[in-house]
Image 1 (cartoon, rainbow, N blue to C red):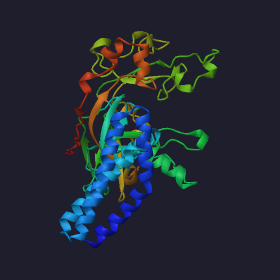
Image 2 (spheres, rainbow, N blue to C red):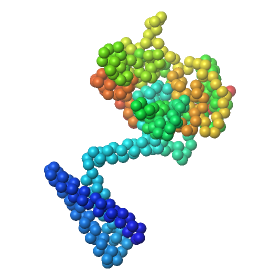
Image 3 (cartoon, rainbow, N blue to C red):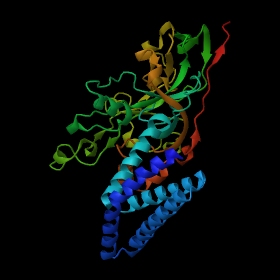
Image 4 (cartoon, rainbow, N blue to C red):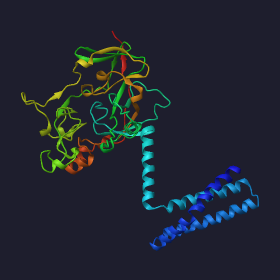
Length: 402
């Protein structure tokens, strides 16, 4: 009971210091016609005085620990509510905003995160414009498993460790840069499939004209690899011409040009040649005019699946502790371990759970797509069939070598 008395005295000191302030605020509320607020605050002030009388009587009569504790808790609760209601509106909003930001950052960094997929390296499992829910608690108590799709930070990103504020901004906030404060954006996030775990031996070969993966001496059968060709498309984003008078005053994301993820002004979309443009299962928010054609043959330029490149031949490597081998399902358009070798455990953010929602657009903000194409936005850009779609985690199956 001594502890409760000590804590009550602290709250009583705060109340006495603010009592005159409470009375003054209630009078201002009445003057401004805020009768509902003033009435509620007056009732709380009266309840506090009643609580003090009750506590004093319990102390004089040497009441039980429980009755004393219940009375002091009621006093504390009423004081905190009155103190909150009598704060200036701007302070209430500021505190609520700061609290909300802190909660969001805690959830984002330690519980769940939402990630916009910027590139097509995971097609057709995950598409550009998918908004992925990542479970950051998945690997707190269990290990990363082979075949899982994980969220990873750009392994080539270098944090600014010149001071703790810049590092913390990139590590825990990092949504955007604040140039006038010297704060740079953090690493972008990618989705990749885990092929090799620490201790595994991984090797890439070309057999019968196709790239294959060997894991611990056995060739993998990977049914999840994208079997479709990639069609090259040139899409223009933004609103204002760069050379116009208005364009000279506009920020870069409003200027007409190519998507920041376009290579040489082109993006590559997974494409099913057996279907019409409007019946494509993955991307349909582009026109025939936007398809890039060969200047020689006049045919649409495509990148075909299972075409071997020099980076498909690697290893064999034995993965050290804390190192993983990850790749995208869209092997013809994936920047993965074949280029930068091993993925460190520290860059793994969590396990990809499901696709919350999906929008087929190269615009910097989804609202731009809606403004420019208010009808096709709902019929082509929004991929309704991908909302809340669970992501499949499946390891490749070792094939016996005959």
